[in-house]
Length: 350
Image (cartoon, rainbow, N blue to C red; front, side):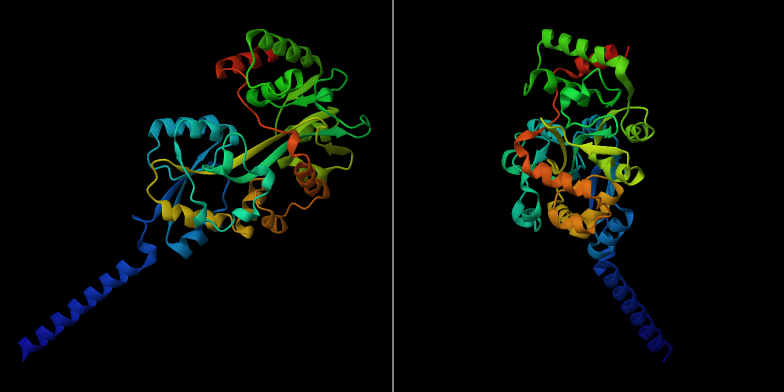
């Protein structure tokens, strides 16, 4: 009898153990080892709760690796040789580099459900015809914020480089040299030594009327009336227009500098299905809007705009103007070697 009870007890215990193992194996939230992706993105690019919701819905864990500049991203990729890089979000000019270096793979658009909502003016750019390797995720343009009491006329790059106005210039060497080159020489892909010398001379002549070389702080300088004019990313526009009624904003009459942050798939990635699942999730209108609210820019998809908190009339008007002036759009580019660009800025600020 005792042996019989012992046998029944052992068999029952064995059934419980087997059942528990099956439950653990079939639980989607225990797929971390096989279902996780490594994403390289700008700091504060994704809402933490959104990533948690994605994990709960799919069982796919997202490991975020942050960077604060495109150069930092390229350095990280160089160190790990592209290993364990599933998805990344570089700017357009870095997208060009990654495509050229064969560091990313082609995108299968048949696995995506949002591409029809992407603004057409963001697509089919020179660095990636047909968007075979890149998908616009966020974007912004550079405009001119100005004291409406001091400046009454429409503005162009000529006004930015005029010695008549006290101004704030971008601190970014890459941006400054691209904009200055466009002003002096138009659409040139590279500059020779004589043109570089002329560009340095012109930028040096700006120093007496340059209040500061600033990015985020530029809006504070213009609202405090310490400058007449500032180059300003539209990512700061909504906040600026909410804070003051004395500052106006317009896009330059001649050209508009556009910057696109693209989603790209790492060449060595082996988690393709999970990547497409994640892409379809973050491009959902409400999820893309969450990114825009914490990483101020514009959404790449028109259906996300209504869910953002950024509804200032000038913010919205800027989208319409960019759409209507697609031929005026320009991208930042390396008009000379990186070392030369750094030297240009050193000499300019000296």
